[in-house]
Every structure is written in structure tokens, then in C-alpha cells.
Amino acid sequence: MIVSSIAKMRKEKPYVGPRIRELRQQRGWTLETCAAQLGISVSYLSQLETNQRPLSSRTMLALLETFDAEAVVFEPTADLRLTADLREACASLTTAHDPIPLSEIRRVAQGAPRFAREFLDLQRAFRKLDERLKIVDQAVTASSGADLYPLLPYDEVSDYFHYKNNYIHGLDVAAEGLAQEMVLRTGAGLEVELEGHVYLRTGVRVLRAPHERMMRRFDPKDRSLTLNATQPSETRAFQLATFLVSQALCGAIEREMERAPFRSREAFDVCRVALTNYAAAALVMPYAAFARAARVMRHDVERLATEFGVSLEQVCHRLSTLQRPSQRGVPLYFLRMDPAGNVTKRHSATRFHFARFGGTCPLWNVHEAAITPDRFVVQVAETTDGVRYLCVARSIFKPSGAFARRGRQYVLGFGCELIHAPELVYSDFVHLEAEPVLIGSSCRTCERDQCQHRAFPPLEGRIEVPTGERSIVPFRVKRGVDS
Image (cartoon, rainbow, N blue to C red; front, side):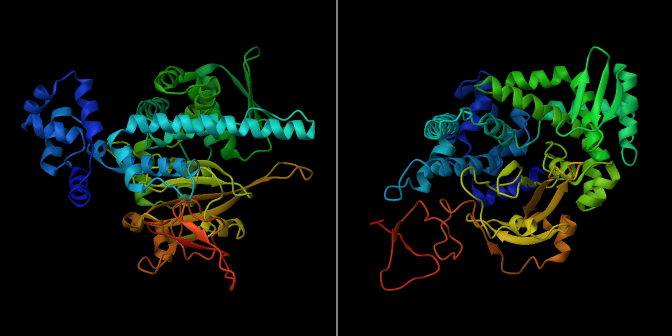
């Protein structure tokens, strides 16, 4: 892991000053004390912390030894994510005639990450206010009682997981320990296995009854837990797991909540559910066993689902969390998208950037999977930053349990950077060296002027509408000093 990080560093020459300063200040060291510990001059350390000098491989080794840190702490992935988030936020606040150059945005993300995150919080608050005003306007116009509180806390929680690399160490380890303590047997019969543990550990009886919306309901008076009988066994098993961890690991969940930087009660409530679900997945797919099986099975999600007795969605989501510093898995992104193109779940341990506002790129294979049910769609794609990915997508259907009620349909998407593609069985069915499909996160931040699928002009550059001709895209983008 350290060797690969150093190799990447030699190529990218990262600037990680704020991270070095944070580690130094956590120990209460002065510049002089820290420089002496690292065996470098005070002026060199000062230049590192102010991002005037890139981090060398020799200094990185000294930092790892002095601060007892993992190499991943100094990898530039977090800066790339923050840069992408800032760029999209700026795209929604500036005009095409006066865009903020990417170089400036990158300097802010690298040199002042805390300020950058505060700016993103402020921008989200602006969006929330803007959405409320629009809804009030619609409500007044339609004379109806519209909901004035958009579910923006979900965005806040998504960002919390995003900047933690989608891995919560304390909770993951605690859930794995609980699985070992229970001697939990995964695979076929997981629901019955977990039902037995629920009764043995809590004295709660498990009942099953059909219901339109409810997944599980706990009645503390008669000590019963009712599951929705119309749901698949894998779903009921997961609900049993969430109940178990909510009882056994509530302390660990609350400790994580205390460290979360949320600003609203609703965000804390949403995060508590998300952390409980995270712990439940770590219970039924314990880290070491699941990571080992993923490697052996080459991340074949269908085989993994059978092996652990869980659903395809649960497997895909869990694969995106395998980022334990000492046992890192293949870095994957994961998303769930509904038929309208709304991304209802998004997690990533890669540099892949999800659009926060507006639609996703129509050339991305998640849209093809939506219209070709029950089969995997595999694609080699290149994003606007030049990174190539192996992208896998498949549609799934969740039945409602009744003819009169419509079931739910989603597309699951996951993938990794092309360098890791041979570790996924899906790479056997595409030509990795072929010309990739060029995709972007959204039209507003995509710089590809020649794309015939463009819905909106990009932020950087001004448009020119020709009068004597008509192309597929009705405008051209002019770039340069006068743009």
C-alpha cells in the first residue's frame, strides 16, 4: 500500500499542506518541534504546510513514521473530490461570462480545505433557501399546502459519508466483532439465523405480516418485531440485522453521531438510520470475510449475494465501503438511480464525481441498463478529468406484493478506475483498450464542446448561435480570452 502510494506521489507530486498542519497541531507541536522530529528544516516544513512545495516520497515516509499514519492520509483523492464539489457549486453561482478558473478552484481546495467546506455549506444553505422560496411561490400560485421543507438533510448525510471515503472504521470493526461473537453463519437461511439471534439476545419475538409500506415495526410493550411478509427474504434478513445492531451497537452509533458536523436535527436523524444500515451490512457481510470473498470471486455480485444470503443492492453498496486502511479493497463507486434519473444513493471510494444538480450524462451506461432489464451492462468510460473507469450497471425490480400497487424499479451502478478493472469479472466481457465512451458528470461542468448529446451549454465559455445553419446542438461554445 505504501509503495503504491509513493509511486502515485512521484507521478502526481501532491500538495497536502493542510493535512500536515492538522497532524502537527493535533499533537500540539510547534514548527520547530515537528521539523526536528521529521529531520527536515523549519523553512521546508513551513513551505510544505503552505503548499509552496510538493510532498516528496522521502518526506512522506518520515511523516508516516512520525505520525503513525496510513499512506492514504496523504493521497490526493480528497483534494480531487473537494475540487469537483467546489467546481459544481461555483457552476451554479456564476455566469458563463465570468467563470472561476479551475486553477483557482483547485488552489482553494488544496490550500484551504476547511474554508472550502464552509463555502459548500453556505452554498447548500443558499440552495435550500432558494428551493423553499420556489416552493412557497408554487404553493401561493396553486393555493395548496405544499411541503416547505425539502429533504436536503439527505444531501448533508451523503456528503458526510463522501468525505469519510464511505468507510466508518469504529462501527465497521464493532459490527465485525458482533458477528464473531454471535458465530453468525451467512448464506442460505440467513433470515432464520438472525431471527434466532434476535430472540436469544433480546427476547423479542419476530412476526411477519403483509403491509403496503412498512419494512419493520418494533412494539416494546409486547416485545415483538413485525416484518413485512411481502418483501424478499434478503430484505427481511437485513431488517433483522438493523434491529440487532440498533440494540447491540447503539453506543458505537451514537459516538459516531457525536463527531458528525451536522447543523440540523433532521440530518442527525437521517444519519442515525444510515449508520444503523451501515452497521447492519457490516454484520451480515463482515469485513475480512467479505473482502476475501470479493477478491476470490472477482467481485461477481451475484455470487457474493448467494454466498452471504443478501441482495444485489446490499452487495454493491458493501463493496463500495471496503476501505479499511490496513485491508483496502478495490476502490469502487456505487449509486442507485430511479426511472426518472434521480440518484437516490451515491457513494464513492474513487475519484468519480456524481452530479449534485441536474441530470446525469445520457452516455453513461446506467441509462442503458434502465431500458434493458435483468442483464448487466458493462462500459469503459472516460470522465472529463481524463480518468478511465470500468462501469457496470443493472436494473432491479422490487415487487410491491399486490397487483394494484406498482413495484419499485431502480438501476444499480458500480465501477472502478481502469487500473483495477482486471480484478472485476465484468472486465472479461469488454475490450479494456478500446476507445472509451466520453462521459461527464453534468452538462454544466462538462467541457466537451463537440458532444451531440449536450442539453445545456457548459459554464466556462460563451455560446454562439449560428443563423445560417442548424446543427444537432443549436449553439457553439466559444472559449478563449474574450469568452
